[in-house]
Length: 107
Image: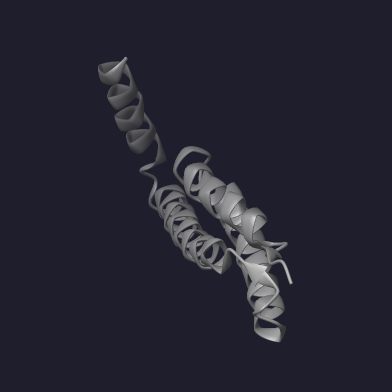
């Protein structure tokens, strides 16, 4: 019997990698959402693999998708908490000025 790729493994990997990128670049919230979706897809893939491991390959993609999704959710959550703290403490403008200066220096 020929083995096939695990159905949700590639999708979980894509969501996981996208969650890390968007957590760092898009103020955190998209990273948390994509990380959650990737984590759910990885769990589906792992459950499917556990039912019949002889039918599927690429379980490593599901594992990697799970790890990258967790990293994206953690990074996104940290960034969201930082934004909430900046808004509550009144240092929002100072942080935005700091980010603007960093961007201008790297341009």
